[in-house]
Amino acid sequence: MAEGGDERIDLPGWPGHVWLEGRTLVHMQEEQERPTHMPRGPAKRTGPGFLNPAMAPARTRSVMLLADALEHDWLVKADRPIRALDALCATGVRIRRWRNEIPGPLQQRLRITANDLDEFALAWAATSHELHPPSTPVEHEAEDDRHGQKSSAVFDNGLHFQRLDARMAMVDAAYQWVDLDPFGSPIQFLDAALQSLSRTGVLEVTATDTAALTGSSASSQARRYQAKGIVDEYAHDDAVRLLVGTVATTAARLDKVVTPLLALFDGHHVRISLLVRTSKSEATAIGKSIGWRVRTEGVPYQFVQHPTPEQLPNASGPLWIGPLWHKDIAGRMTEARALELCSPSAEEITEYQKAGLVWGDDDIEYSGRELRRSVRYIAQAADLMSREHLLLNLDALPRLAGVGGAPKMDKLLESLAEMGHASARYPDLEPMLVTDAPFDDVIQAVKNARDSTD
Ligand SMILES: C[S@@+](CC[C@H](N)C(=O)[O-])C[C@H]1O[C@@H](n2cnc3c(N)ncnc32)[C@H](O)[C@@H]1O
Image (cartoon, rainbow, N blue to C red; front, side, top):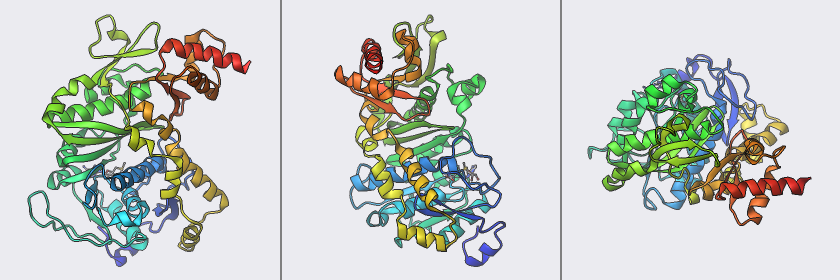
């Protein structure tokens, strides 16, 4: 692993080209294309040290969530530190963003460990960190590890790099925050991650095996998740719920219970953030939150605990049927907050340009748009997503309502509000909405919204 300046010279391909993600300068390898500001879908992987720009929005939300935990003290008591592990950190962009973009006064309470098996990726991460240190210098003492010994971890200006199999890293120490961002499925890391968490902790998980999670690859889904899917307009929501359900049942086996904070299908991956607590009694009650989505006559779907044999052909599951977001925490994920935390100032841009960033006015404009897009619609939908709701695809409504075309989204939301119901746009590439209205009222609202447009 490269830690010193001299080794940087030996790092093949260094310095690559310089890019800005959030407020953090990153080095991308020369063979990686210059990203666009709104990359979607899986990027072409270029071997070890690959940085996927399509994951930038997920990393922005991760910065916001960790900042929120420190600021609002919902994970540890005020003034207590949070030990965070990025178990599969690759070139270290997430941990460097945590260090650079979470406000300075909170930084002293963060202990960040960055782990990866790949030597080259770690060297790239350490070299980037050394050359572009965090704006707030961070120094802290090593703490006691889970065996009561003084940890031997050495924090180099706020980051401790280590090269271990992630499962070993998680068995070795206890953390309050674990991030799992593997290539493909996270299944092989879940047990160790859950055991690594303190009595109360946060687990953030990325899964890119969306074919298995949605059920478009039925055999992988059955083998990996013991589930069956239906590939329709609810496949993305099912994928999110299947991953939450899988973590929740794995946690229950370890006497732990999960509370989802935010869970999304984002283009080509599923990303879930869960609060995990040790509680035997609540873990015993896990069955109440696991069930099936049954497509039915009359309403698009309903959740049931156990489908009847007649319902089974139209059912997907078993999956998480409880709330998917936390009202207050997701409610604070506003576009203004994303910009406040992660948008560079004019002075920072000038400084970064001196360090090799080739950015014009368009780049600055587009990066702001991307930051806003990372959290678009989340705060507005947070209340509904934290309680029972109906999820609907606008494009499916004409068929269900027996009308000629879809109403405009804004008109439909207005019409539902006039009828006394809460509703909000849901963040998805498809035009999705959530509402607490009974389905019959939605149909009426669709008709009203269309009439008012005509
Ligand atoms: C998708 S990348 C991580 C991306 C990174 N989180 C980011 O935001 O750029 C997956 C990483 O997992 C690492 N990896 C795969 N298996 C591992 C294991 N068993 N232990 C530790 N690292 C592993 C790979 O070297 C790779 O860097």
